[in-house]
Image 1 (cartoon, rainbow, N blue to C red):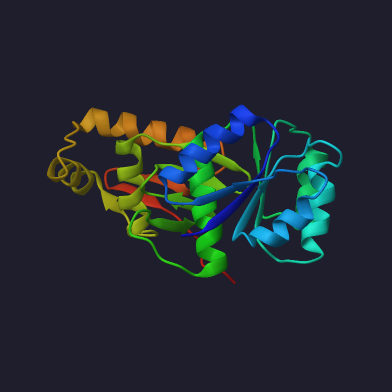
Image 2: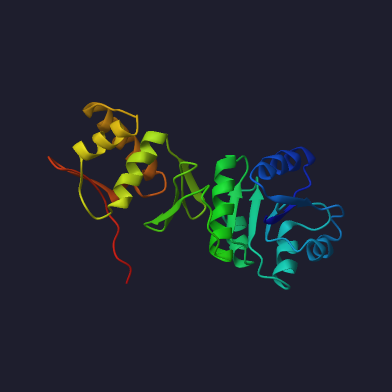
Length: 229
């Protein structure tokens, strides 16, 4: 069980996040004395820290700096502040990610899972995560995350994206997609497939990934990903 330290002074929000994270089998700790955040961090020895910027006494930037001076533990900022300088400051201080409030809880879970997997090199059957064009594609929660931005897909949209990514740089015919959707008890007609692909591409445009889903007229679709290097 991973231990998470949630540095949040809003009691209502803390309780809500704690309840949801506990449902995912995380052990969640809070701060009792906001004058002694570093001391309590040292006592808890968490595997990951989630921290707000606006806190009593000292802000989250201060405590991130203090924690980084002693540990490389992954840190996620969770804040209602969305000024670009706040995000830049977070990254410069060594944070691993920045999530703006209000947020979709599935986005938080996806980011936590991705960071824990990367840092601690663990595997889980609960979430299947793929990387495509620099984005984290979470098949379980239907979330695609690129940098600090995330989008949520419908089950059909994610099913189509998964089929394309599994055969990236290769054309997947419309017949293959529709037959797969039929076998998965999500039958769609030819017109519905077109609508779903267009919606998928439009959502991906929000994080500048729509251009990587190409239509091959008379053939099908292709998820393009250039080879690194």
